[in-house]
Image 1 (tube, rainbow, N blue to C red):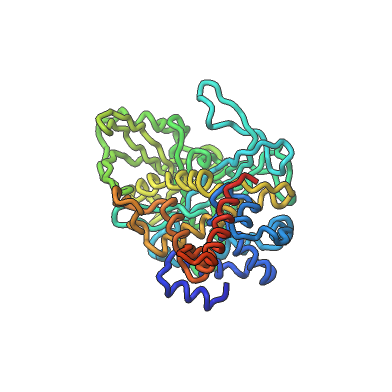
Image 2: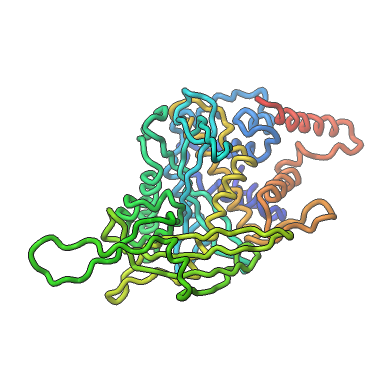
Length: 479
């Protein structure tokens, strides 16, 4: 679509569609040619408009490209027609416009598996099946990625969104090897992308802004703590029996090697028996006020990373009543990298802020569910050594653009009113409501009106309307 068409759509009170087309235009530099970008833009719109499985074939069918040559569309992912690094860089630049310089640039890192059924598809390997019971775990074929997701600034009610910047491939040693994708552990792939992100922030003139990385226990090992880039803070969960050591005493310089570790400290769970030293606060998260009892201990170091002091955050578990039933919230333990101030080690931010960010880590799990169950990430059937990985990353990119367009249209709360009168809508818009609003705007805009006009009483127009309906119905078929 031309820039004039984009402007017409924006002026026609179609906020999501207008912002989405503007975001697509902002990523034009990642495509080698203009015609390649036009096809990629069409495929992205087809992903959003498809009512069936979200494969490339279904996207083209939803666009009505039934009799056209499809090979050029498939080559976008089969051959290096697009620069993925530039695509990620452009998306990062779009998120920076919503991140103030005063606070940190917060991201969540998390491993994610895309289920597969083939033993020969590039990138697949055996992985633990999360759908099997804990007392009898099973295995399945899957592709493993590391999600680097940007956390939006909070709304007044404590809502946030996780917008994936990139899904980096983290393939085990025994995975079917794609082209130019080395075997890496999950934390190694995450650490590599965090370093890249730190460099990109420096290039964008944000060298003074700290990068906050939030992760689960998979990123709490010595390898991550020892290799953190400068001006980067890691907030990661740790095990209840994590071995921690105090800082070594400052001894007079003499002969022999200087000590790296002090005395062994308590295990994190042992602090729960203490009766004093606890602090209380209330976190505003997702429209609720959550009471939290916590304590801060440290600084400590871990074996293998003596140069990076850490603080331990211990959060007590509580019993809460939900719909008349008592539910237990288990204790949580977090490690956060310390910063040096006036010759002593301190927390990078107040403990209440750190706990608020830690609580919002769950948003990345919500985005995984929306991408897999909603947008169908992983349903594209690509078997090439390049496209098998790139197809998944491309679908994640389309999800990020749609969520970012909704964020620019409505913020984090409110959004369009639902269709039914029996429900006034949630406190914040859901991905399904965003998707529905986008489709309504598409089918009601001037660009799409020639195809989606209602039948009325004119049988000539009704024929065109039925033809357009046929495209949508065919898009429901499993191809």
